[in-house]
Image 1 (cartoon, helix red, strand yellow):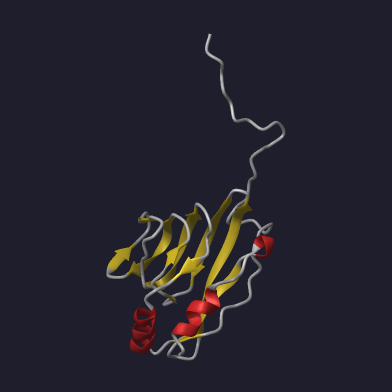
Image 2 (tube, rainbow, N blue to C red; image 1 turned 90 degrees about the horizontal axis):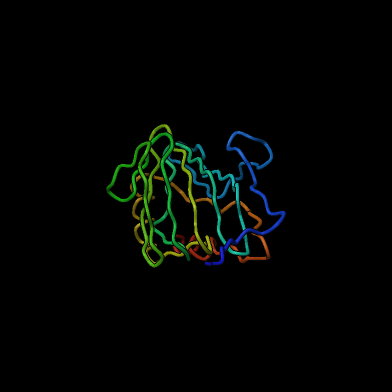
Length: 173
């Protein structure tokens, strides 16, 4: 008779969070000054950030016109547009659009539409990002009269280093 296998861990239960709940705050993770002097931000709500195994699931809300550099992640990454629209490079992504970013590939730059955008994202491994194309961000910032502002401070679990400043510096050199 075949033995049944189950990976069940006694006492381990699901965790429930809501994009609309207050138990997990919206935090600013990226900022820019627009040509009219106003500021735009990327806001994230990290609903699941595990370090063993490492992964991150989040909701992201991008203010209208927010620009994100061309980049990749140190893990596979998927995102779905829930509301609004954005461009990923030359591709317009509206509600229901899904992007799969395999480990080792990159995408962007991104530009949020006139109403902004709301995303759901999952990084299945180290969620930190890398960039090897700073010129594409510099070009689009100049075209739109946008100035990238310093990244708001964030707190990553287990003393993970915040790598964002490495790539922000490239666009100001």
